[in-house]
Amino acid sequence: MAKVQENWRDVIADRLRERNKNESARFADIIHYNNRLFDAAAKLRQENLDLKIDKKIRDSVNATGTGGSSTGFATDVAAITNAQIQSLEKKVLAQQEELTELHKRKGEHSQMVINLNQKLSDLQRLLIEKERLLAEKTALSVSLKEELDELKASHITIKDESLASQLRANAAEDKLRAVQDENTKLLNLLMEYKSRDAEIMNKENDKFVKEKKARIESELERAIRDIPGPSSLGPDLDRFDVDGLPEGVEFKFDAHDGEVNAVRWSPIERIVATGGADRKVKLWDVGKGICEQRGVLVGSNQGINSVEFDTTGSMILAASNDSASRMWSVVDHRLRCLAIT
Image 1 (cartoon, one colour):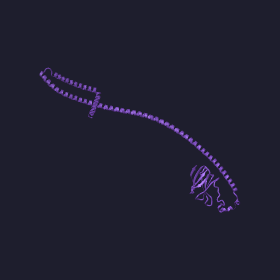
Image 2 (tube, helix red, strand yellow):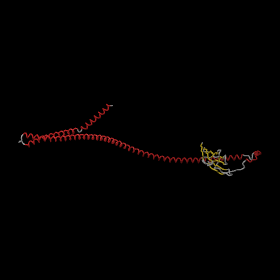
Image 3 (spheres, helix red, strand yellow):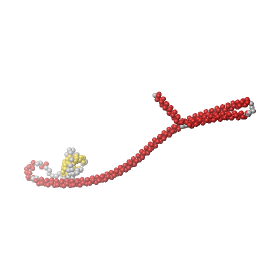
Image 4 (cartoon, helix red, strand yellow):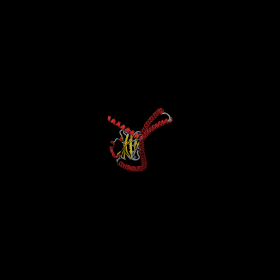
């Protein structure tokens, strides 16, 4: 673990040195020439100082003249030289301080150059990142634009398909309307044909009923003619109870338009139900000494041939020639049930 830690520290240190080298390499020539300029300036200052000292010495020598003694000359030169040397040393110290300040400024400028290089590197990295983001955004914009173009094309296609579907739907509705109209016409025609068939069948039934009625009347007439008179009965007539034989007609009424095919008494009331060829069942109240019509039960498509009350007298069942049986309520005369065989 320690080895791995040292390794990554070494790697970081190497990378820092490499980065410092790369960043300093750009300004190495500038720094080198700057140092050379400072060195040349210092050398020139020193030479200038030496020349100034030499000049002052010569000027002092020339000012004293050649007439003095050598001892006085030496003393004067020494005094002048010591004073000048002290002043020159002060100037040298000032120049050295100035040189030190220049070196200090040089270091500051170098540090400033490094900082500027660091900022430049950061800005370059930021610029690279921004350029990368810009490239990504550009690519995303291009892809979104392509997707938008595809969606527009798809929208146009869907719109055209919707228009075509609408046209097909309109055509189908027109066709359906035409078929419905034709169906209505055919239905009306079918109802007309059925109505005609029903009229033809009713006519045939009426004809059949009339023929049957005529045949029955003919048979009844023949049967009446064949019955012997009272004289032929002889003494056997005394065997019958004369009070039990009907002596006359109690009620006589026209129950139906045509033949009466069925008659039935109610089990609980003095009500008579009759069914006839006119496709109706009629109820007659005979309990008050007169015959009154109590109700008409309709709904049959053919003539009624049989009627029957239930045990409570509240319902009545009738069978007709259309192969159907129907049940009505005696109270409200409403059709309750229909059975087709």
